[in-house]
Image 1 (tube, protein in one colour):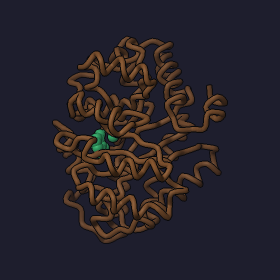
Image 2 (cartoon, helix red, strand yellow):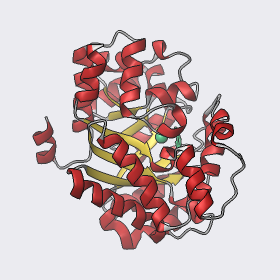
Image 3 (spheres, helix red, strand yellow):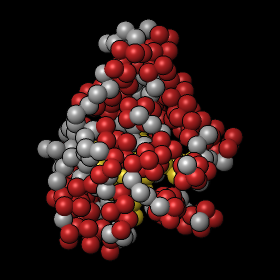
Length: 326
Ligand code: ES4
Ligand code: ZN
């Protein structure tokens, strides 16, 4: 299939990627062993067999378990470098990755341990391959505003390494407005702002993200399509949607890849992009996401190019760097 070959060869960006969601079972067992940590599953096969989710929470329960073997700086380095090597081989030239500091702080792993490991891997990828990156610290929305503020405080010595803040974890019941003040403080520190919205949560959460929080991007945004006025507003404000096809399928945000709304988003003039979210859990990395769209929808070459272009324009690269890629 020439479209598949084309999508593999295109230079791509990844704008929605949780580094803890790149934890492949084999690597998880290897790090568990060297850290003398016991996993709830005794084999790689048993763990993989548990990757059958019907919603976001099913997945998150396993995701938090999986990351519990990460203890030392080298663990964060190895995790990040394995991901970067993988996507370098897929012609990804720029990545903007989330990490969840609170998922590690709660287990006694210090902020500096986490960020040093991740940052050093990002730096090495730039030295080795010229792959550029941004790092986004994400607040866990099922935790309190106070906990998010404590996390922001811990990040202050590392602001030179952090480009923005995000909002992830269990969406329903934890609207963006819960974190309005944390996002205001983040912005005043010079951080960019994005949030997961409209993955499982209603269009109103997307409205809150854009009108109250003032996000520069929307992560997922699928349910924005239920509200015509919201669609027009997202379009008028040139907001990028970081869409995650295989994630949507695995978490039952869509029932069939044939019904994936990404072509509809493009037709509406929305700036949709293709991303892998948590590739180790959702059945594929960047190229697998494109391949699945090509196999299951009648997506055209022009649409594939548009998605890749949107990944450049919607990134947080400097404007002159974007121009170089376009
Ligand atoms: C996530 Cl797919 C998704 N949604 C919300 N929070 C997350 N954390 C990691 N992956
Ligand atoms: Zn996500």
